[in-house]
Amino acid sequence: MTHDITVDVQRLPHAEGLALPAYQTAHAAGMDLLAAVPDDKPLIMQTGQRALVPTGLMIAVPPGFEAQVRPRSGLALKHGVTVLNSPGTVDADYRGEVSVLLINHGEEPFTIRRGERIAQLIIAAVAQANLVAVTSLPPTDRGSGGFGSTGR
Image 1: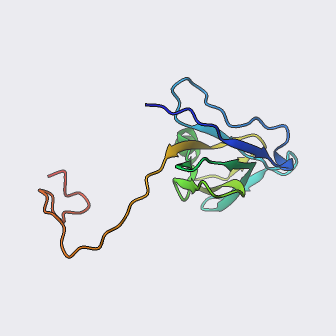
Image 2 (image 1 turned 90 degrees about the vertical axis):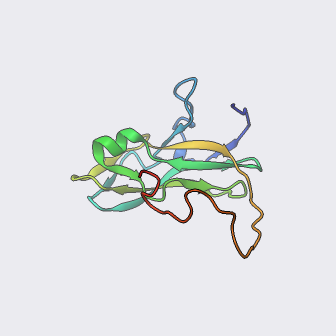
């Protein structure tokens, strides 16, 4: 099921001339975020380096939703560049610039140029839980089996 919602976007001066995020296909879940680095100063990420890359966008996510910043599979596969805190969360009450925390896990330096597609932005519904302290939990077949316990 899809929900059509409106998300207000404010473009900061360093994003002038860059396209707004947009879905590339009719059934795409994410919109590409673009790097708002200066034309004359691309960002060169050395192997193992982290960088907070500006998008030049501020967004007003409606209450009951969040924006998730996720990696682009092509960058990860081809260059080893991914979103470090994946998925990054943009809460509905955040009004600062959306930036993307990237890391270069690749074997070579990676250059981020102005307008480069660096991540995906997904808008998702949020449910807030009411936690209730109890003395025991109801049993399940799995029990306390942790990592790797379901593939027996």
